[in-house]
Image (cartoon, rainbow, N blue to C red; front, side, top):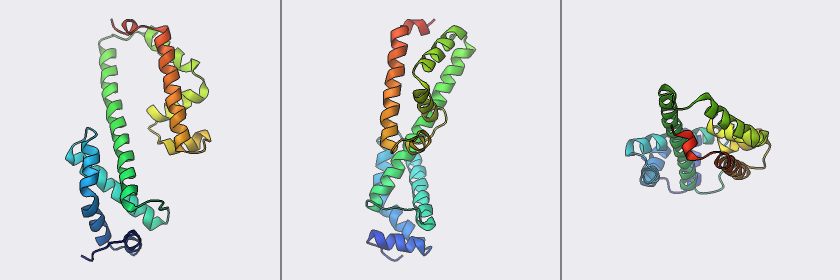
Length: 184
């Protein structure tokens, strides 16, 4: 395997279809990416999957000409892994809450009145907030996708807006209900 030292060499070799560039990136960044996932409640197998997916994203963006480098490749890969792992954690969280919700429904712990009350709170936070929270929590869109759909300047703006909307919803629910209202 030819040793590649500079990021530009890695990019050029990928553009030529040289898979040894992927081997090099894998060996060079493996420990850092696995540590990222494992420090955030993941297993080594999950970390391997995330890192492999990140390498595929990097390879595809490089080949297609969509790659815009504003940092080192390792930093870029790290951010891809972070985003992929966040999405995986969100997916796991949703699956877990869906199981809990179906358990509640099976046990008839949630009445239609309580569900309606939560929906009423959602309706009171405004259409923009409702869309943002729906895009994020139910449609699993990234902050970049939400920013684009909502016409925000960038993902950071979408993230800030989502945070404020969630706070607003939490505050509204807490002002109208006690925790005991939802526990039978």
